[in-house]
Image (cartoon, rainbow, N blue to C red; front, side, top):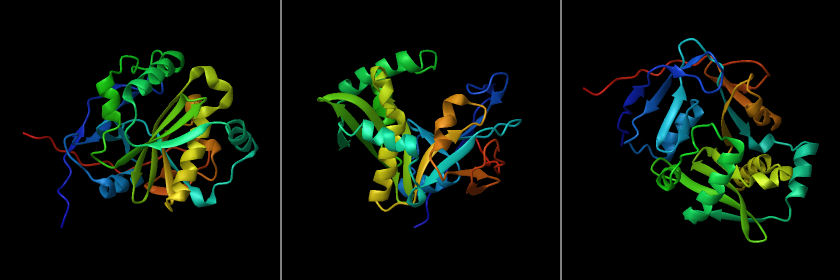
Length: 250
């Protein structure tokens, strides 16, 4: 049976949150549609990303700084710093959760946002907004929970498709900064991707000029979507992607 066609939308130009002085435009799949895990996995391979119920790709008319990035996990080798990170967090309890305690998660999420992203636009995120992040309409969503002495210290929200996992969002206890929990979460997602026998872990977008995104390229070998093809990612190179044809409902 053929899949129903996807309805696409193109947002108006807005200020880019990543690079000052630039404008951003985004193409969105119909947020009311249920894509299914296989189709969503194909969109990941085309450079798309999920945020809540929105599946999107940046399609800016005068900028191509955002590079979709993924890890071919079978070839990943942790460097010295990443091996130290694994040892440093060996005392944490790990749990894969499908139905989390939303209130417990929200308390940690709000602490994380206030400490790490106070002006990032997500500080007013509600309980319903967080539940929407866990929406599994497009794919299987699971969470990797890390606990220290029973207390929740890190959560990695992860999307699952037949072709790979996607690191959707990670938040952690800001008082545990010395543990490098953001990097530790990626190492756990790499291990889970391998355990499931899947080829890729998708890490979203990388921007060469954004220091906040530099950590993504420390996981090697990584690939970027460049010129419509996944290639080993050299530093400082931006993508050229074919535009998605969009149409509006009358």
